[in-house]
Length: 78
Image (cartoon, rainbow, N blue to C red; front, side):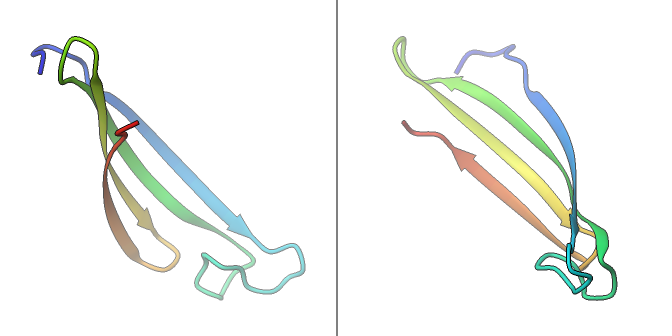
């Protein structure tokens, strides 16, 4: 691993809505439109060998409509 590499940070917000006035999959069933995804992702490329680097990331997500949170850890092998 090379020290001094930068960590990329990305923030995101997502919303869900219903076209027919009913509830939708990611909401709490009370609204036809709601914010359903808020989060931040941190990613970094780790150099394993001279010819192979491993992109890794961690993402923290929150659904304010349903009031639950998730953390995702990922590595892109190929």
